[in-house]
Length: 436
Ligand code: UGA
Image (cartoon, rainbow, N blue to C red; front, side):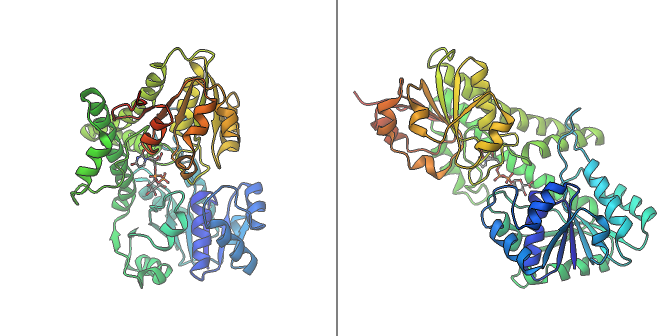
């Protein structure tokens, strides 16, 4: 039997996937509302495929939920899956929930069981937790097993990971983790066994590298804009070199979400504490290039006339497609920035309008795209849902006040919009203007 502490995005996915691998799983969370929903087989957020898995295993009884830590007592391995948000007073990670999860599980864990951290934490955290565990329950060991799952592909990434990384303090702990993942290891998934500190670092280094790729291509977009090149062609051309690779080179408004931005900042804070000044400066640049990509789009929008009292239609609110997550969403940040310039901003998103409205109650939201476009001064495409690629530009040409579309994700067919009479503008690319 396994336990999962924290039933948010990571914990709910891990729990349901471990049930799919055949384990009995108990999910623990202090949020009673969430536990009630999950116990009824209902997912409190959108994640393709996870809802079916959850329903299936709640119905079969393999997956249960509780607010009581005592209910994890029979489990052999406990996974800590709680969040580590950015602290309100700076860049560092808030470890309140991780500490509470360790205390709660340590108190009830049976002798010989293993507590495994999956949360993303600053390097050195596990050492501290391990020392605390030895005080509370010396017959239980701590290991670290970072996750690399992407929202929108969470089930796939958990059941078919591209690698499994474990930080362990004994051969026994490694064996326990190998047993958990035995079904995946049959498929020859690379298995990397490390010390606790390296395992913690692998996660933040991986996310920082991904962030670096995105900020790199956005820096190239800035150069293309200044020099008159096309960043999408540039990205394609460099991406054929397998040492570079073509993924994560989509220039635009940059990265957001609950992971990359806060992980890079927490890493900055830790690098500073460790006196790793060069790493700190490097990470700071990645972060500031990313934020610049957002403010640049607002400036581009303002090039088409004063935004005051103008209507602007924003396509997209989620931080990326196939997600209803609006945490640190570049799309919403830009929508809000445009509204701060006096525009009347109307936002659409296939899945994320409710969470977006909760966060930004002053923005307007619409399901009806053509009504949203009626008399619009500008259209901004900020989250690349496939639905937006399927739009017919001519329909919009009939209703807007001003035929300008800014594609913040470099994802639309610019020629199609241009042919419908629009000026098509995208970061790092020459502007397309309608043929006379
Ligand atoms: C990210 C990592 O990709 C996962 O491996 C990791 O496990 C996860 O964080 C985590 O730490 O839990 P996720 O936050 O789901 O996953 O999102 P990504 O797919 O990485 O996208 C992040 C942001 O980068 C999005 O806003 C996306 O629009 C943007 N992005 C991505 C670009 O601007 N350009 C690209 O080429 C790729």
